[in-house]
Image 1: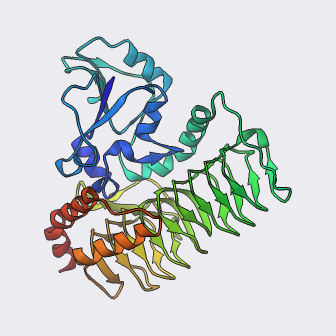
Image 2: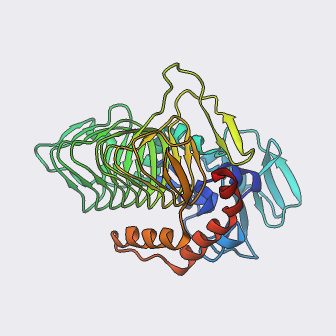
Image 3: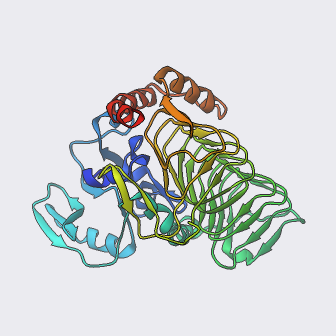
Length: 387
């Protein structure tokens, strides 16, 4: 079966900067990406993407999908049952939005059941706890956890903890009383780490010594994370090893938050937080009092950096200084609160290559094309803001 995800144009724009470098279905929420969630139900499918043309080299499409799925839709059993009952040419629609179609869409069928559709970056952390619980059931179904043998590690409610093979856990505290804890293959949890569920550390992740992992956290593959972390998703391959707080945030791939980085997620007056919207190019009321940092891929900050509530940082930015930078930074800027300039493409590519080499990964030709396209696409927008 060929299954193709499509990026609804308005949703993709609303989910920037995270979707500059990936289709919507490759966003992570819970343990898995959205695409991986669908794989639980269609395990033998071949997966394709109908997305922006500059992404298609890395995420190819097909002209003959058997199912076409909105990449922002998270599956559930009720939705799967409805899909299996579709006839050729039929599609499910909720509030005017196409969810899925079988073959060429000719007939709309209204779908009224509860469904999670990711429409903005804050939806990822807002629903992460629920999706962690859902994914945990799917990932562990019919399987047996590896036992934690370290005598100095304390586990509360061990029946709600699942450990893959190859892990190294030393003198940690794992509390799964309020939600499950998933520890992926080859994960290292260092001495003194405190983990509270729901929580996931995906394959190859490192939880640094003395960490405080509060609930609703996802540490994506090969991330190295420490300090105090609350209700945050690290999509993959990013670092925040040292002390400092981050909460209600989403961090892309290949990012680095240096020692002492702190992210505010709550205003002193408890007022509703506004964030930059790529849809309107202005501030948008989130309706939330908790909202931290949204950071695109390849971005980084220096020691003691501070980010205000509702900050949005684009792709391949470099921020330094201990003063608050603006709440919105477009892609490819370099500087501090005192002023920003363009982060030259050659330098940005060089930093990305060096950062990836630390994980023994090479920057592919397709990734270099994607980065170059974003740099050029955002040039006029970036220059207007910097001027």
